[in-house]
Length: 439
Ligand code: SF4
Image (cartoon, protein in one colour):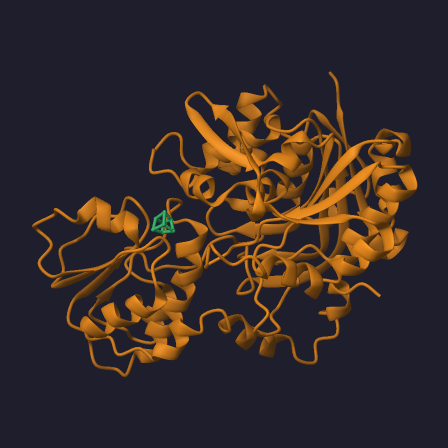
């Protein structure tokens, strides 16, 4: 049986050597010669308002720099670094470039002549990823000879892991991203993203495990310093190994399981040769999920502080990134508004498919909830927050109207919230900010 090669490098023992990592998995430097390369880091989120934890959240700039240097030495003809971080304001044309600058990529532009591209600027190419499912991908990425895919080694609250396959979602336009969080039970988020490997000409994956992340994908997860790199010319193999190290057999991760079936691959690691370190020396269970009460009616921390009179059921995979980002701020605002007096039987619903349990008041967040329930006469006192994504100001008003007196600044300034998480890392030397800078 043909075996796909995956390299596993410990950067403490071997140095941060991209050449070594690629060499071990059989990638010859000549492979990149004269090719058009699209480098896709993972900058899942960015704000220029505050410094926020990037460990395990964003691809380290050290890895991005190492890759660009290596590609240059290999004689790649054209190198683009492109990303489409979450934009809460779709008209924002500057945030992506602020992220690139904040991570030092402007130096790569000046030093190596790479082009920095915001995926959001397009143009986009429509691709049929599955029968009848059309998505728009950044054209430069689709037409490049090779995508160098640089995800972070992390788990993900919706897709269990976010590795090479999931990182490619950042190449979609906004409408297509929303579409991937489909309400179709079968052709859901996991199913749709499992089709990504076939969209591109070739994908070389390098999973950045210098820092890894539990309960990702964002700054509220728990990072670890793990000092590994996982490389492969085969995207599915890289993800199988990455997921194994995060504690999940490939079949336990729905989108990898779909990709295995679709591409007729082995259900385990038996079709992979791992070269370098032994994955079992690094493997442990990373939780992916945030804890909710047994009946799923609210997050465990809400129960712990004694919140009563509120039902805020757990997010599902139909909640797309934009509403997801706000969800965290809503939860924080509610937790801080709790003064020990039960609220008056309020329910908050998000995503595309949630059904009410008919409390006294139902807050329905986002355009999707509005469309689904606007004609539902059984809801006694509906408060709709329309918009896609919804306006934080209107969420404030809705919560107030339902008797939950939140501090309006938390939602208004939700992009500053990540700064509060920096406290956790004070005095912890292993969380080194210099990994996200380029000298
Ligand atoms: S309302 Fe929210 S869940 Fe619905 S498409 Fe818009 S961002 Fe996604």
